[in-house]
Length: 195
Length: 161
Image (tube, rainbow over all chains, first blue to last red; front, side, top):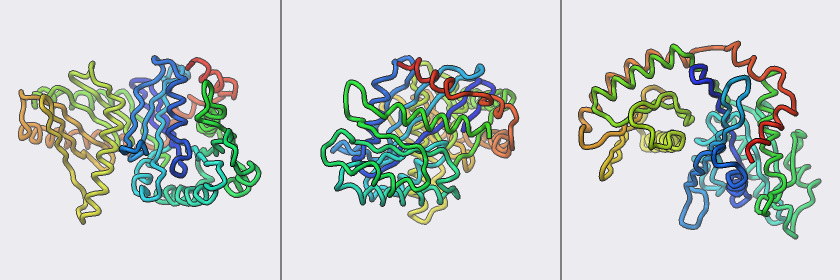
């Protein structure tokens, strides 16, 4: 968390994690589309020629001031493909909250589990455990026909019982679940300070 | 991972002054100081036409990738990077374990001059940044989020659209 008392600014870093093609980039692209231009910065996507995230996506969002402090969210996504593990570690550094985006498609069930374990390893590289950070799970692609029931996904991915949301990030005009997921992780970050 | 960086006015004033002096002495277009998480601490000089937020996140990403590359090759760190453009060039150097100095310059300056001045400025920056890095619990930041309700947080997002 970044506090600049001189410029009266707070910046929270939120990282979207999950297996390849689960919808991390789609999540923040929707957030970018749904945010007034004055309240967001440029969406940066570092991707391969096949439009797969290569290093990270980045979107800065401005929220209204809190007690006179400008509040900004820096949203990052990690590359989901398995062989980009080193890059994922780098992007996780300094995260104030994490959103795990699960791919609800039946054939991606195992990939979700692998990615969740990978995320725990990324956290442990910085001596953190999942229980210690603001964390939310999103079950994305609920609009597709071949999806695993949420109860099964929840049992496999959410034994801790953290807040979780169903979503369809690719749906337009509104992508159900995307904003709710982000709000919850921000709520956890901010109210956590009160404990 | 959930580290905390707290900058006070005096820190900001000192860091700004050092960067502005560097800009003058190195004849640079702009000088930026940021942390490894991509947070900008100082942006001085000709920055009006630059998306500083994006620049900071990209420089931080580049620097972290370069650090990993160095370790892969058995080096402790690649402390400097230089990107040469047709009109402007970018000099990036690690000031400390957690901070990155970035200098944008054009034909009015040279890489050698930038390196020389940046090295001197880095020593001064480190002194200030050590105090920032070592700072412990800040009672002010605890008060900022105190008493926030779920409705307050919900209303923060309503104004985005």
